Image 1 (cartoon, rainbow over the protein chains, first blue to last red):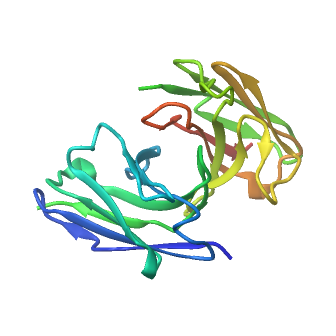
Image 2: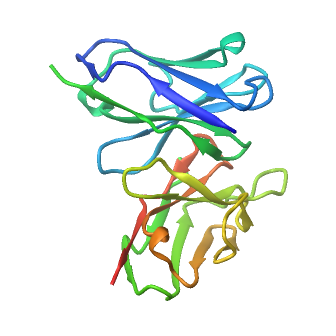
Image 3: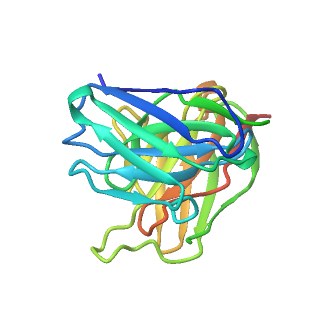
Length: 116
Length: 112
């Protein structure tokens, strides 16, 4: 079945670069895109960006200058890198399978805290 | 950016009852290709969101017919009939018509 699992460090310092990995199974990254969605604690959902099946990417303009999404199809992994972290980047980061206009399967999320 | 406004912010319901959640967008969600990319998600306590409805009114695989979506343009509604305990949580609408994709602030469904 379709599964996604996020991994990465839980605690980051301001100005550092965040690196998260989303490992997928049950589908191919060359057939489906994967997006990243952030959820600040107790708040709503914010789409950050997507890497499509063909390898192209789209980013939320609010974080575009700091964000990079890439993948390794041979390992079924998608990567998120975001630099110049600030406390407001704190939240749960989800990767989710793209179904074109939305997300049909989500990972369990990884909590990231940015604090000195 | 397209702003998605959900009302109410919270909702109390009795088991077996029916509720409606409204989602309004600041711009029309009709894409150039004629489709309207409005989805509904449910986030149960302590869990990740799950897709309920896509393209306004299409139920995702395995979703009960107690959930129904409707609307057009900028005004959309999610109806839940015969509410069950497993329906409780926060409901989000989301648009995939225009970048950046955006979500509503959420509607928390609680038991009365």
